[in-house]
Image (cartoon, rainbow over all chains, first blue to last red; front, side, top):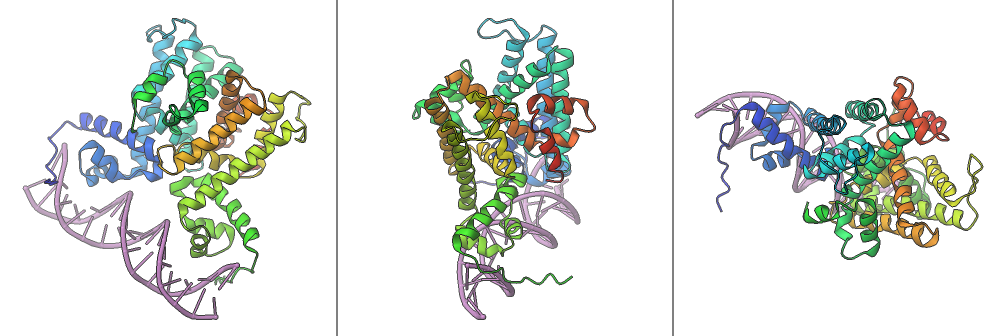
Length: 204
Length: 204
DNA sequence: GTCTATATGTCGATAGAC
DNA sequence: GTCTATCGACATATAGAC
């Protein structure tokens, strides 16, 4: 087993950047901001650790890039729904609530997006990351209130459902699906259309 | 300023343990599991760092103790409500939903409880902590379903509201209360009876 | 019961070659 | 655009005194 590092094939900056951000989202989502190492991100992206630092300057700005990428994906998906360009709801529902909820759950497909979002959300006490996390959170809130026409109570309940989804993914509730009836009941109640997909993500 | 370390006054093991757990809850809640250092916990508790390790063995088992303490507080508060011994609801409501919700929000008084709970919840991928976090989460779920008589949908919605509260505290949304109308509206909608208290917790 | 001193390991970041 | 080598800071855990 020769684990000699072969130089990664040259790539344009933008492509490599997106590739690294995707890897970083998964790593930050799994281990959290502090727990994730730039070395783990580098290995996940197939490049060297100093190159990660070279590209993003610091671990902190790498995380900020990951956070903003996640927020961009979220806002883009929501705007597509509001413009009538979003995917159909699995149950056939056509109301905005259901469609936005489904769009949010669909972000699960891009592993790490919701998890790194959530990691950012609990870093509110960090003087730099906290500012960005709150700004992003509130931007989504405004989109719901102003563009989607939600009432404050509807927006609150929508966010509550979203935070529950984030938490269920973060706690890896699907790991107990087969062995604990309560876990199974909870998952079937909270995200009936996504349980199968969650279970297919075995081993992080 | 002589910062020479004076030996902490001798104390019985149980008292010191509770004192350390309270300090550790705050530190873990603010910085997360990985971000918190045993040294920061030690300083917050007024003892030396090696003594923390001596008491709990490892940082991991210290966190597990913090997690279980938080779950104990939660379950105890809920059982008191169910036994009719809980505090009254600030709005005068007497239904179980409102009373349990108020009991949950009251845990905010013990700084760090809800935050370290949430920290545990997003550590599901950790092979040790994840197991304890899921077990605790599901124990609360069973209490709601079996002892409080909630339907699966009611339990889901109750948890959703709880996870939203945890997230709002974690992201320090109250930091934007005065400067961002959206933050203000959200906080007033999501936890009308607790905004004042949250704002009084200036500076973590 | 509690401390000081320190070994050991790890991580982010820099220097510099190709 | 990408790598290897390495420095310096910090954190957990151990050893052992009081």
